Length: 341
Ligand SMILES: NC(=O)c1ccc[n+]([C@@H]2O[C@H](COP(=O)([O-])OP(=O)(O)OC[C@H]3O[C@@H](n4cnc5c(N)ncnc54)[C@H](O)[C@@H]3O)[C@@H](O)[C@H]2O)c1
Image (tube, rainbow, N blue to C red; front, side, top):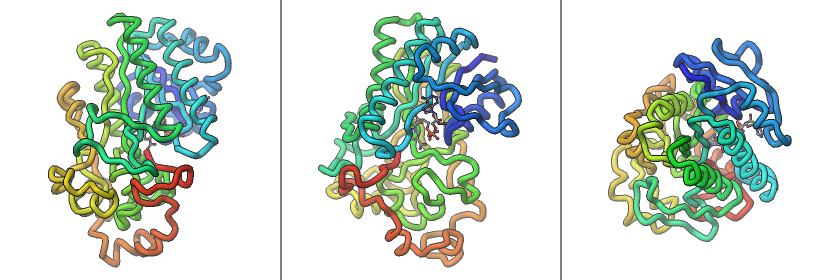
């Protein structure tokens, strides 16, 4: 059992991380500006309400709670949800404040949340990667303050790793579009649609390149990562996604419709293959996601054309498209959309 300090523990992802790590037998210390409602705070977890940007707060809390590991999730998590300079300064300062405080306190394992958006898909100037599937060798090309702040969060842990050698182990992870347990039941996902609506209408999931991950699988990933961090290279970055795409059709068919010029790159995106490879996490850590929309949706999603699924999604695909403020990846006007992680 470890003592794990989790920032942003009240958030969409944080709640599942706190619950999953507590369930795995760890003592979890959740720190967030907003409290987790007492009835939802799992046994084995304690929480502190604090603004981690207030001078000295991160140092004080980390010293007082003496954790074995820090997982930093706190951030403005939605692109364009605040002015660009506010997102940039909030996220980069939070990452630096928490990672430097943990380093100063000698916490042996420090992990920060990044985002797949670091790669730069959705740029209004157009975007194509060298190849699919995307992986940790795909060059980051952030095009907005949120994505840039995540590249800097990755570089922040790498900078400290360079300075510390292997005395302290660091890592960053890029969770795909997070689906929390209640969202399988019909609660709205981060971009304001249900999971079923995102399956019904591929235009809703295309801006995120059909990526997603169950929040509980992210908690499992973090548990395995912390266990294995001593034996892997320092400062590694991992994609954390589901093993399939959030789409009812193969991405080789969908990408050419939504990502201009991608046709010749999609030969490997057949069947249920996702756009983002999780092979690095599999190979270095032995982690495997357990959940998929195919296992979690009740009743199962039968297909974009069935009346039952249209009824469950409440709106027909054409109406959903009209309600959607996102446009196709590669054709997104700057600042006009809350691009998805
Ligand atoms: N949700 C996704 O799909 C997704 C995808 C990729 C990456 N991420 C990253 O994962 C992390 C968690 O995302 P989320 O969806 O749970 O976000 P969220 O907005 O639901 O939660 C973020 C939490 O951080 C807290 N916070 C923000 N500023 C703070 C401060 N100054 N002091 C203390 N707490 C503060 C907020 O109160 C909030 O509870 C973020 O770093 C996000 O960028 C999320």
